[in-house]
Image (cartoon, rainbow, N blue to C red):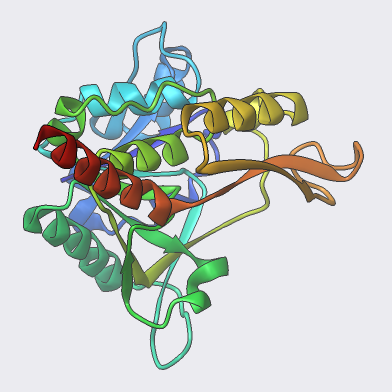
Length: 267
C-alpha cells in the first residue's frame, strides 16, 4: 500500500512526511503540481516525488488522479499538514515510529478483510467514541482505498471542488460499501487556512457553492449550515463559514432499504 501526500506551495514545511518512518518511506509519495516539480525533487529527492499532469489542478482533481495512477492495489492518502496520536492509558500521546507502522498495517488489514474504504478519526472528536473503531462514519484527511473496487463502482473525487472526501465517502456508503474508522489512532492538524494547499483558492463564496452542490448530490443526507469562525476560512467577514452536517448512517441505510424495495417489486 502506497501513501500519497498531495501538496501544493508548501515546499518548506511537510509535517506529515516528517511523521512517516523510514521503513515506510519507499512506499510514500509527495504528489506535486507539475509547476513545482523541480523544487520538490531538489529538496526531497526524485524517488519520493510524483508529479501530476499540467492539467490536473485543485485538490479534488489531484485525488482522482492519484486514484487512477496508484502504484499499488491499495492507496492511502494523507493531507500534508498532519500530526498523529495513539490512545494509550486514556491519553493521546504522539505516535512513535512503530505506532505509525502499526496504524498503516491496521488499515491495510481492514482492506484485506474486504472493506474498500477505511480511515482514521480526527483528534478533536476522538473522545466521542469509546471503542477502538467504528463503522459507517465520517472520515477525512487520512483514508485508504481498495483502488480497483472504488474505480469499478464509479465513485470519484472530482465531482466537487472541495469536500471531495465527504462526497467520496457518501457515494460509497450509498452504494452499500460500509467503511471502518480507527479511533485507536487519530490525526491532528494546524490552523485551517495556512498558506498553500486549497487555501490558495478556498474562500467563503466557494465554501457556500460547494456545500450547496454536495447537498444537491446527496439530497436528504447533507444539510448546509453556517458555523462560527473566528479566524479560519475567511473568518472576520461576518465571523462565519459555510459548512455541512451529514447523516452518514442514513446514507448506508438508504441503500439497504432501497434494495428491499427493489426486491419487493421484483416479486
